[in-house]
Amino acid sequence: MKTRSKATTSVGKAKRLASAAATLAAVAGTLAVVPGTASASGNVVTIVYATQGLGAEEAATNTAIAGFEKANPGIRVKYLLLSSNTTDALQQLTQDFISGSSTPDVIESDIIYPAQFAKAGWLLPLTKFHPNMNAFFRSIVNTVTYKGQYYGMPWFINAQGLFYRTDLVPTPPKTPQQVVADAQAAMKKDPALKEGLAFEGAKYEGAICVYQDFLGGFGGSLNAANLNTPANVAALQFMHDTIYKYKIAPASVTSWTEANVQDAFDSGQAAFGINWPYLFPLVNAKGSPIAGKVAWIPFPSATGHPAASLGGDDLVINKASQHQAEDWKFIQYLERPQVQAARMITAGDAPAVRAAYTPSLSKAVPYLAQAEKVFAVTSPRPVSPNYPQISLDLQTMLSSVLTNQVSAQKALAQTAPVVQKLFASGNS
Image (tube, rainbow, N blue to C red; front, side):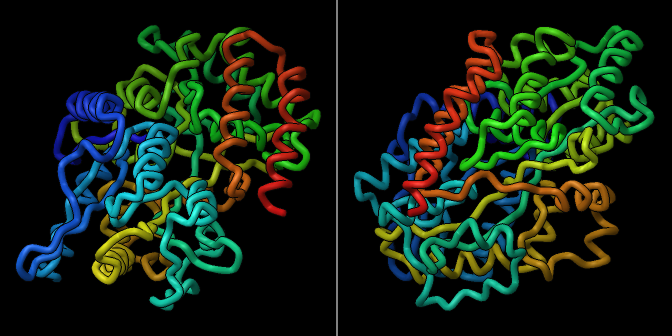
């Protein structure tokens, strides 16, 4: 669910690069076909780093790799691009893990996967490195913890919120219905708008994150043990109605990922867009048609208690890696407060390391104050080794409703007991 573009490219070229990266990953099918294997040549060790990227994240990662290699002349890092779709990236990684491959050595993992990888025995427990987890925000530390051991290091925190055009929506909406009214009014005001609301509705992980945002709008939650509630039905019905009743989202949204939302919003064709903070540097870049006209808030809640889907990535080590000491050195470098701060300035990724939050970072990142309000109401997706299967069931449920095949009430009634059973068995 990630697209790539270098910070120095134009918005249009960034989108073309994102599309090309996604297509290349899909054609590749497995990580093994991408050049680069861990090796030792003379006094130089090469490790393979598998990662995704949104917006300017690729440029930020390349900068960090260059800094690491300069500080560690005996280690080289090969940059391996995963699929832009997080579900496809999981399949690619799983294939390599199952094959017993020693590469990739270090992996950028979505926060929902370490428990699954750890249970399967694919990750190196970090006990021998004595990681200091007190340096990180507790909410994301939980995502690398499995049965009392740490299997990864938090890297950056993400939260999904509602971007809106301040020139078209001067006052931030306070309820889901106000989002509808403001979107409809904006579409009437500006004929150039193609969408009132852009969001990720394809059958993949991103749609679950959007649903979680909508859940907060109606007082619901993604509680795997109690999914079928009136509030959750109302949120799912609203998600459906944005397309078919209110007509503020296009029917094509059922195949949209972050790349499509980015495309619609930063080109000035949408009044609202649900996405991650990486979008801020893009919409405010030189040449953007909406630079200086964008604000970001948690999706509004009728109950006054919004929720933002917690995202973010962790750094994990392949248990089969032949260069674990070098892997750990690389992770330690990426975790440096100054490296994390530089990444946020370039790419919009909020540091997981508490020490990175300084007055100078606030000055360099004008939207940090907005981001902190969204981060303050984050909600995690269920943490479970069975989450991949839970995710597939939720994706199927959401897709069936968004494509107008099953009612929201029936879809939740059918899916809730299945999810509850998976969650209970995975955490027993």
